[in-house]
Length: 327
Image (cartoon, rainbow, N blue to C red; front, side):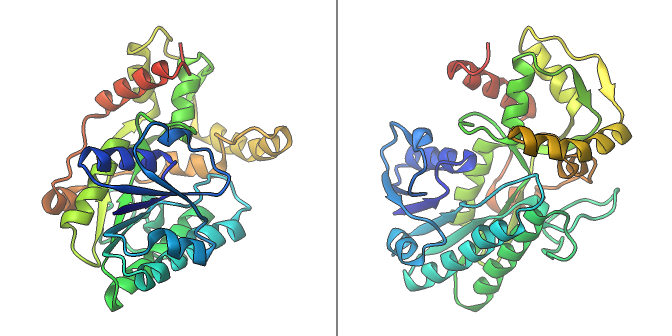
């Protein structure tokens, strides 16, 4: 039995699809009152449990051949440190404990590239970068760094565990949607009048899912694998979206200094208007950070090879159209 926490998330529901393609039986652990639309029509076992509820979690994961732990909070806003600690850190501790007590065959933990200490520009980000909550930027990154350390420490002791580290994830089956999914939808719906200066490393969600399965099948205990893709600027991304649609490329390119200043003013606006934040100091930091990442180790040991981003964007646009979320 393959067990997936966070199964309704972007990576989670795609991972479930990939496991089913391989003929695996899948048990999906979802929150008690969470919508299961991303799993509709899939032949899976559903269990309602919260990673903060240890007895329910133990019952959900007991004696699994593999436990893919993806449940967690992803956020680009500040002020959620306590919640991030409760879910991302304490929840992962519960998963580790349940893996031991429930005799799970292997734990595959999905971390984040934001949990790695960023080296100076000119240096490549790889698995030799440190997980250090004191040195990473943002509460989200700190929580994922701490959780990653907990998993690796357990692997050194008595738990068969592997850590996977995706970069920015994009692709189809983005039901909620993710931050980048919403950005793509906004562009295709003609809501983007300008674009930001900046770039990041993005990887196809389907490749990440396949990388997670490869980590289960071929990864070495106690090792971390960076599942990154390719660097692309926001301008290049919008040019590809323009070619895939009838939406013209915005002509106005906003300078970095202006965007950074405006991002601080945007925080109270989002809070007052109750709009999901897209433009925050943390998101501006990410777009200006070092995104030179290497998936060489994952390629060598797991056979990981991400597809071109142009193909990912084409498939993403097609999926949003099928779901009638864009013209």
